[in-house]
Length: 161
Image (cartoon, rainbow, N blue to C red; front, side):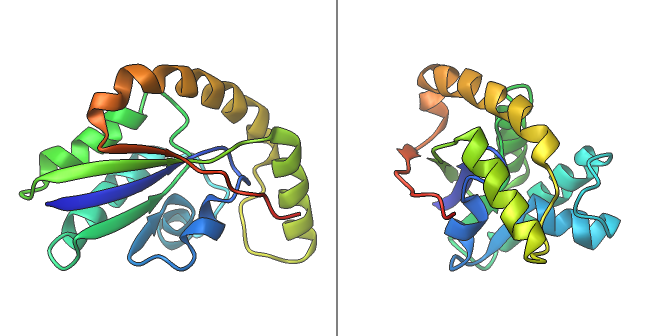
C-alpha cells in the first residue's frame, strides 16, 4: 500500500515549513520555478498539477510515502487531482490530508516578512482572501469527502511570525 500525504491550507499557513524535513516532496511552488522559471506564474496550473501527479506516481516505484505540498483549497480541483494520481498508479494508494490552521492576516504578515528578508517564495498576498474563502468552504465539505481519505489530520500548528 502506498501513501500520499497532502497538505491543505492557504498560502503562508506553514505547509512548506511542515514539509521541510519530509522526503520525497512534490510542491507546486517548486514546479513553477522548475517548469516556468517563475514561482509567481499561475497561468499554467494544468501543467503544474499534471506534472505533480506524474512525479508522485513515479516516486511510488521507490517510496511508500510521497508528500504533496499545495494549497488544495479549491473544491473544484482537489478530489479530481488526487483521484488522477490514484487512476495513474498501479499501486493501491491511501491519502492522508494534513489540514493546516489558516489565518489570513497571519499569512499575509508571514509572506511580507519572508519577502522582505529575501526568502524565495511566491508573492501571493493578493490570493489569500480568496483562498481563505475557499478554505472555509472546503472545511465544511470535508465531512462529506472523508471516505476518500484514509485520514484527515487537523494540525494544531503555531504559525511562525
